Image (cartoon, rainbow, N blue to C red; front, side):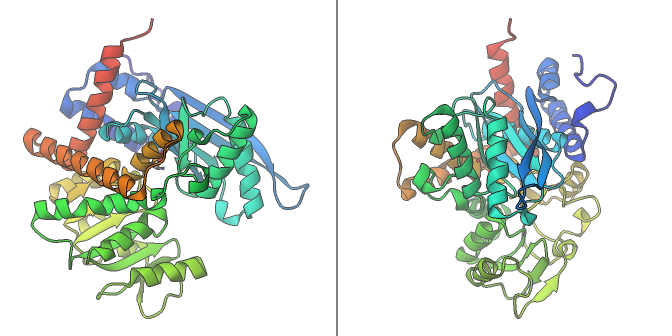
Length: 427
Ligand code: GLU
């Protein structure tokens, strides 16, 4: 095997998250005895598009230029799939790492996709709605030959939402001359979007908790839950856990965390955030910092915001027995070793947060067939797919002696490796 990176570091893919993604792949490739040629191939993405483009700010003559990316990691399994994030620190290496995670995730869930991810290096919180619209339409135009219902299907990720997906669908459709709902998922239902997509990641994650807690010998009802992040994933995970009878004792957002040992009233917290934009100022609770949040006494910890938050500095201080990862890449490889030594049961990101891409898959299938399912059908199919993926990962973990993260990665990587071997090398 010749390593595609040669001796020169990670070149243009250099970034902390890409290093983490590679360290994870290399570790698992070693324990599962992955074919050397396939291992080398999977260390790099197949296609990466880097573009810079201008968009108009509110002052007509104020034009800002930004970097934007779309990375497709594996094209072997079908079209590629993955979200688009708008964040001020997005870079090629980060997007490539997240695309790699999407490959493992879609493969683990047996979806007919390879992994992709997109991003724009911009802070969406300082942009007006028309600015976000112009930015999104130009991003779509730049990627017009890259994305498509048969090639690469974006979806929401950090900093993007249903409205952004609607603008992508509209711009793409204007370019091809007819409505093309299947180009993107996570759209509003009026455009062929799926009901229950927004809640799917958080709710899908919580649907795994009963099986995980039963395995560990406790119950979700009455257990103490801490959620890091109150965006699309954290909010619905907190709500679903609350509805299941858990005490959600703390949640947080970028402004910090709120804590109540008797459990927070999550629907009320949601209302507050809808009205005020952030958790800041929420009454009758103790304030905690995002750092303190990870050390709070609890049974279940759900990191559901940015990556790289569970590190070797705080992994020792976590009290939870169960960690369910709503975010992508929340645990560094170092921290993961500590969690493994401490015997903390982890439902890894590629399994725990796979509800989002699974309902995205349903949405895409419905768009291609112009035949739409009921909410009950979507939720039932989601639960079934999530539940059986969890059981399979748990079985691999028990039968082959791996921790849950390794087992999930082994299952995901194995399927991609087999597909690559039977397709062979062209020409
Ligand atoms: N951005 C989400 C993820 O990281 C969803 C991707 C999708 O629905 O395609 O899984």
